[in-house]
Image (cartoon, rainbow, N blue to C red):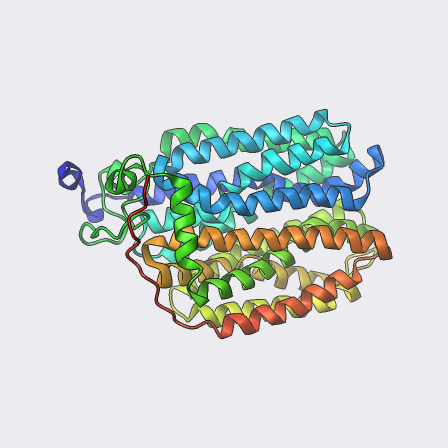
Length: 447
């Protein structure tokens, strides 16, 4: 079993380390998968106009999507370790494409629950932030925080790329063409993933980027031992579901896990759940056109890229706990003043909000992933999957609750104020996270 060791080459003998090629393909995959993240807010009003469905019904479809998005993530991280990132990512993109394409055939509300909820939820849950953390932890020893920031920004880039076109298509010729655009974006990336996305540095015959020598085995998920190679190290018949549940059992005994999960649940509630799902309908309630509101969200996407990459750079240099506290508190201030900024026209104060919220959108990801790696070691990627599950559960609850608040009161004001209060709670929790140490050598997981 020592043959792979003889093929590993130091990074300095290659002009471009394969890790950067893998990261580039991963970025494109995240862009392709992100199309649907831009869709619900834009498509809600057209679907309501055509079918007469309530905001609560459509919010329920988004909530199912977000729940599956979150609960799939930790199992997807384990599946990536068992079968490799290439296979899992390709299947995920196909599910997203199928769910988006089949949406054009719906004519009953339960059908939108299957397409938006089940298919796309399973597909997006198999990628996104867990995918980014897995690529960074597997392929990079140096600059991990920066790489996680760049890959996380892929979702923002996807929003930026798709949102203006989805908004334009939703108005003319219609929302069905917008759904087909999302499907095409996801499926177009599959050939690149199959050809260029290597499962591990060993498969490419190199060490992880920044490694001076072959890393010692740290158990499943350790840098340089992810994918099929890791599976072989731990046993070829390792059960991914058992691995994910075993990691959850170990992590649940550590206080830091619950602090990260609580903070990230609030993060999801105040991004995907509220702004991502309900900003456009809320702006429409104040007389703003959908295309204008979609343009504002696209600007959020632009600054999200900048903020997330910058957060990755900062995470490599500063205490991630303090960074999280600052990010959450700034977000809470923005949500507190948002009801005062919404109007039929775009005022300078709204531009300031969009810029600040964009910089803060998923800046929480690099420090959260860093704390998972610091505390849980080889289990870090799968633990982050469970923390991300909390993120999406929070998003799902907020999406549904905000829709119900809108139907009950005719406006979203209470939803924005409640979210602002939650951000303050998240800031306090994050600032008080202790430097717990968990067992970094995971026990063998039975098949």
